[in-house]
Length: 231
Image 1 (tube, one colour):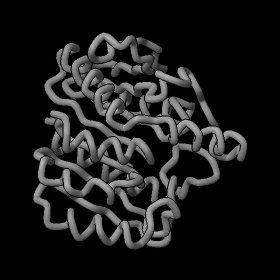
Image 2 (cartoon, rainbow, N blue to C red):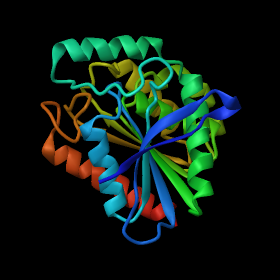
Image 3 (tube, rainbow, N blue to C red):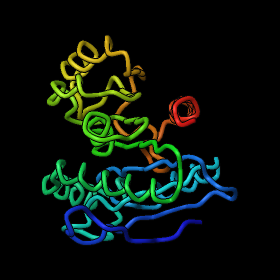
């Protein structure tokens, strides 16, 4: 079980709430978990706990803290899904990257050598942005949205990035996926994994969207990716 903390945001804006889980032995690396549009809910907390169980210092910041602090939503409840879309519309991704930089400052102050980042949905977009704009040591995005609109930033990616792409993602069109592949397949730091016929959210920790076999495959790939690059 983890604990709730707050950490200083950049430029004296305030304090970012976060859920943190510590490993049982001293961590040499950290993993930042960036949520979907549903907040730091039970599924995200389970992911954080899972990274801690593998020996990482793990933390999930509340990315909606500026306008909906502490919100936890269930994507299987239609009304809560619509509420989440509203928060997505309010979210400023540039401020989200600033928050990631603040979390990176925090993890490095804990004495870990390297920090990875894994994000889901909106968090998958932020994983791509973090790879291009921050000093994170490795990043992984699951079904990131709107990445095709910022492929001009790919040249700035200097550390390893991996993206999980379900081919039937109803939020990322086939044309968008083709653009992502065209731009990123040749990139020496980027790995793309396709999941044929699967939809957005297939690796959710719980709920109706989860595809068990694909989620296990994707998560093992992510574990292997971090094991290789956070040493």
